[in-house]
Length: 366
Image (cartoon, rainbow, N blue to C red; front, side):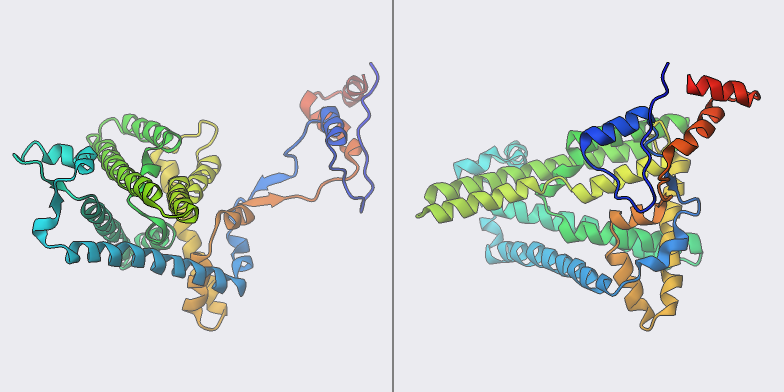
């Protein structure tokens, strides 16, 4: 059998990127991830590389999104509730009956009065805001505890979970948690963890998870129905094509934003790095991932000591942290060997695992 020719690239040569050449190169020697390694220290040695003046711009953008979202959640909804007398929070309009909450309310009311859609949406979004503010307060409480472990876990949860959630949440976006791509893997993971605990927590985490998903589904579905009816009415009653297009486009944009892509990608990265081959985060692996993140926040704080206005630098880095930074910290790429043919016999010898080198080399050549 003739020896397969392996491509040889002199140092400094621009490596080919066309499909046929790359296909032939790796078909001859299919070692795709030879130069890819995970940083054994979790990437902490490269934390200083995250400190760049452009961080202030992206951190300011994050803070702006937070304030903008809270403004549009709080003031319009409070205005709806305060502009109407309590007696007018209900109506007899026919379209209000299609809301799930009104189907429930109808069981206890003899007349045909139902909760107005704008009032229902305001109550749902303000109630959801209180829930997320409660989670934020919990993280702040943990951040004030004496132990370093709890303190930095609380800080990490605050800047990388709670504040991003407050920056983008809405009633309709609650559907993110019940979309199949998100719900099914999380349900299986928490069910496996419940089985592995052998009932040590009496299944309370699983019951809490399911109860929250039912609430998220209810809030998201109600918000979707209300906004769909509003968009349909606006389009049908529009006096121009532009008005109809803008109202429809605004609703479409909200629907497309239901799935939080950043949160989904972040979870997949953590599963890839910490979960192992089975793609299942056990209780220990989940704690390891949270510990890594908490220690990263602590490392960022220590690294910020080298700069003036330490707190501002720390906030700029952690508030602008993205999945790209995670990849930059955790992945280490060894420079590619240009003469790949020179390493081929040595790698083949390792695969054969024989003490007779001459025989092994002959077998490789054949």
